[in-house]
Structure formats: structure tokens, C-alpha cells
Amino acid sequence: MSEAVIQASNLTKEFVRDEFHIVALKDVTLEVAKGEFVALMGPSGSGKSTLLHLIAAMDRPSGGEIRVLGHNLRELNGRQIARWRNENVGFIFQQFNLIPVLTALENVELPLKLTHLRKAERMEHAATALKLVGLEDRLSHYPRQLSGGQEQRVAIARATPPPPRRR
Image (tube, rainbow, N blue to C red; front, side, top):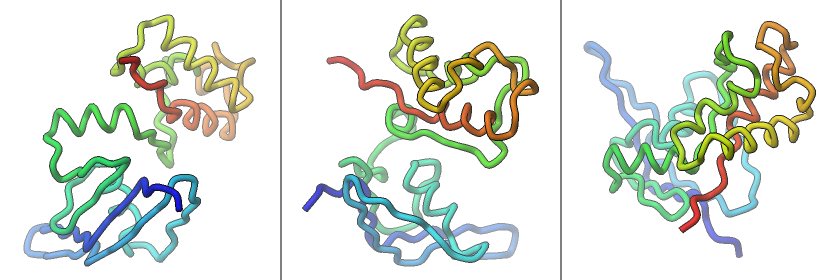
């Protein structure tokens, strides 16, 4: 049996908007093992994005427990969450959110500026990530010079986590 990378128990998320009380998730229990492939499916408004935001520590649950990669996310303070997220989570946005005045290489390197990596290491990681998605010949291209599929691959490369900090 593989170790669990995500464990949620009785996870609940509620929002209050004006006079409306919205229950986005109610008592969700989930376990995802290392190496397991999981798809979240459901109609609009069923809580898929809310669950992903909780797993990525972009939001805090209203109730229940959530552990990701061995960390109880409810116990981490804001600074600890930011560091944990920076070291463990990569985001691929629906609209890609590439910076138009930055090249593909610079777009991938940008979030790495928040890590422990030196500039040469950031550039090497960014170039390697772009190579992995088949864009080694587009490093100096700006988003407007790329096809939609190529922009998507830049976003995927940007979400590739940096190597772990050496202790």
C-alpha cells in the first residue's frame, strides 16, 4: 500500500456572501495514494475548484482536517503555508496567465524567483522544463509569438516544481 499524499477527513468549506450562506463542500473524506491518478468530475458548482483550492492551501477549510504530503495544512501559519505552497504546488491557470512582455523562458523562471534557487539554477530549471514540454526551440519567444497549445505548454513548464532545497 502506497503512502497517502492527500488525506481529507470531514472537510467542509462554507462561504458567506452578503446575506447568502453557501456550503461549497460538506463532510468530504478523501485519500489519494502516492502515484495514484485521480480525476475530479462533477457539474459546475459542485465544489471541484473549492476542493483543489483547499488541497493547494489557497483557502482554509471551515471544518474537518486536511493533510497533504504529511503536513496538516490547518496547523500552518500564513508564512509556513506560503513556503509550503511554493515548494510543493504548481498551478496551471485556464487562461495560462503568461506575462506578455516576458519570453517563454522568463515566464517559467518568474515564480522560481520566490525559491532558494540562484539565477543560474532558475534559468537551467526553466530551460529544462521547457525542453520537457517540447519547447526548447521557443525559449526566447514571447506569448504573442506562440500558438495556444505552445502557451499552454509554457504554463505547464511554469508549474513544474523546483528541485528540493539541499539541506
